[in-house]
Image 1 (cartoon, rainbow, N blue to C red):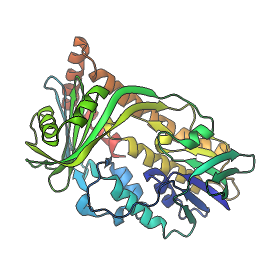
Image 2: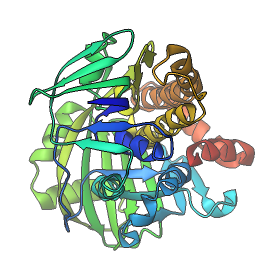
Image 3: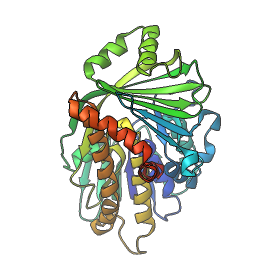
Image 4: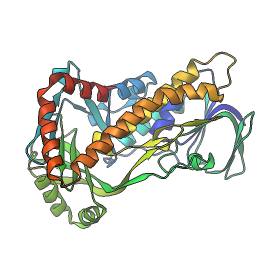
Length: 385
């Protein structure tokens, strides 16, 4: 089977790219190892903060309109606390924006995207389908599936996550920088209303975020050492709730667990290249960042948006796997990715140490930023895109 674009990886980035290429005139295939997730009434512990720019991108493909908005929470304010009383506050009202972000479940977005893809005329879905071999030739790339089928495409897009098989097959090898931290996630019902506010506490032993969800719920992302992660995961439910309430300074009162905790290792991945002839990487396959800014999935959506734009604007006779075309995508994405990686890496290192001078500087910096309106707006508007 022959296609113009073959996307490997059916997560949020891969599916959003496929949806964005509906009007491209290209024949597109999407290969995903897992079967499509069935509808589920339970809450997903994988929660994302989607920027208004990300929501706009999903709206263009119709996915946003298919969401159950009763399970989507607007973020109207953000409060950031240092470890010595410093406080930084953002509000959508001050920025003249309807909201700072939207908090919603991975599963909810995945279902909305999948529903649209099944109606897309220029798209062929292969799921569940496992890849066994990938070979690049001058004229095309060839993908072998486990069931023996061979797919041929002018362009392969690797959107298969942080441990990307496509990236390894392409010989793009760059060891990640391990942060020696795990992200512990869980959802809770809060005693006090969150009022659409996202909270974050920078602490000497980690970074705690509580993101607002509908029905007076919050989603936790707690970046801690592997040792503390193991300790938190082994706690009884009531004790973990108490630990989170203490760490969040009882801002939302007592907490009641909704989804059991889970943890994943945190790392930084900065690749020397995002493209090769007939190959483009996107999403976590192309970069990893610390989750303290909640921008990982938004970076991935911006990858998909930019790659789709490059392919849509190509010349009528231009090969969509041509390296000169793909380098437009790489050049357009490098600055955004690098600036987010540098910012999150610097903040992580700044707060995850006990140096007295740095402790003073970091808390002064938060307080000073809170008082300088233009600087606050610059930081916030970057996150809105």
